[in-house]
Every structure is written in structure tokens, then in C-alpha cells.
Image 1 (tube, rainbow, N blue to C red):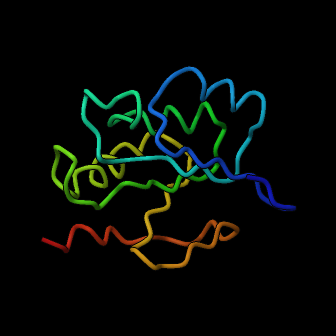
Image 2 (cartoon, rainbow, N blue to C red):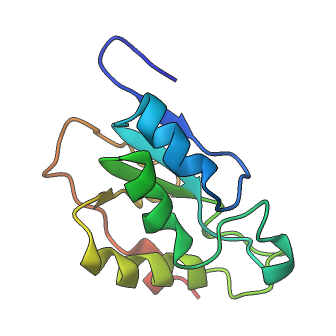
Length: 125
């Protein structure tokens, strides 16, 4: 999706493959990549990114910001509901891509690089 001031990639349910690099080369860089991060299982790897894939995908898309989706959900995932958010927070240390993890309903200011997000899921059990 492209607006007069932003380019946004909406991943949907895609899984990881070389198509992401092709998209990044042909249409990037992107201001925001909305990528699935959760509800994963090895048998679903062709339709959902597996842990560790989201930053590789974002780099290949040439994304400046990532908004992980499918996070913080309960079943059908075969993992704890907060595991994807814990994983992505740990993985973010090795990249300069801005990670956006707003609480449900929290506004995101894409043009405000100073905006910070709390790890809201850590206080919910």
C-alpha cells in the first residue's frame, strides 16, 4: 500500500521464502512492514513466519519499522500466547529496524522515532 508519504507492506499469511527479497528489491524500501509473528508451528511454516524469520523478512523487504501481528493471541497456536512477543523483543537487539509493539488500541506514530512501547504482555498472566 502506498500513500503520498508512506509505503506499507502488509504481509498477511505468507511464510518465509525468497519472494520477500524480490518484493523488497522491486518495491522497497518500506516505511512499515506488517508481518505475522505468532500462531506458528513447523507444519504451518509456509503460511506463517517462524520465530526468527520476521527480522530476516523485514531486512529483505528493506523495512524501517515492523508491526508484528498474530501476537498475543491464544489458540490455535502451539505455543504460549506471549511467546512470540517475548521472542521478537529478544531478537530486536541485533537490528536497527524499529519494532512497534503497541498494546491493543494504542496509537502508533510512524513519524515519531522517539515513541516507545512498553512490554505490556509481561504483566498479563
